[in-house]
Each structure stands twice: as C-alpha cells, then as structure tokens.
Image (cartoon, rainbow, N blue to C red; front, top):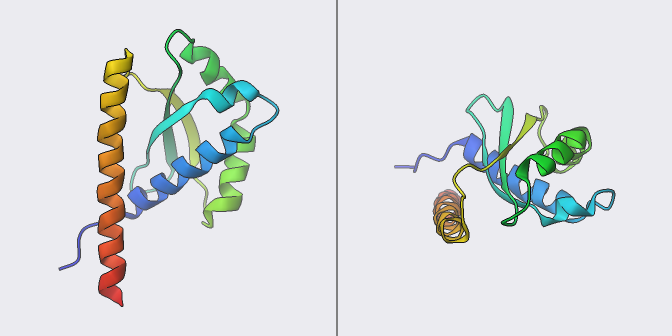
Length: 131
C-alpha cells in the first residue's frame, strides 16, 4: 500500500526552499536575508501559501512583515519561475507565534526538521517503489 503523501506537502516544501533562497540572495533589502522561513501552510486547493517566518530575538517581526509585503510580488514572481506549476499560489507572510525565546525556537526547529525528514523519506520510499 502506498503511503499517503499530499501534493500540498510537496509543494509547500518546495515553496519554503525557494523563498529562503530568494530572500538570501535579495540585494534590494539585505535585512530580508536575516529571516528564517520556518514552514509553509498550503491547503489542498493550493490557492494561498501562508509562509511563517521568524526573526532574531530583539528584532521587530512586524517590520519584517512590512518588508515582505512590500516585495511580495517580486518574491511570488521568483517562486513562479522556479516552481514549475501552471498556477502559482498567492503568498501571505505571517510571523510565527510559536517562537517566544531561543529555547522554544530550537525545539520548534528540531520538530520541523524531523517533520521534513519524515516527508522526504516517505517520498523516497514512494519513488523507490515505482522502480
């Protein structure tokens, strides 16, 4: 029996990687390179990608939210170039409420890394089963 692996999970993982890459290379606003893209929530209809981000402790997440909103069109255009989909989801940027201090941030990142590894391993199992 094939494992259940939603398309939305695969697309959200791709969007997360692409947005992180775009922000790290974005020269117009170097401050955006200091963001951490934590995860992307994408419903099954693939209409709206809610991208959750975190900032360093002591920095204002709303300031970064305004920067991201200002450059949302450019970021979405770059996602569209690299995603290889007919319809590109709309993008919303949300500061992650789950991170209050550095201890909870590292715990959260460990949980997200475990989740990403699980999704990747089930995809690899699925691909190996097709061969």
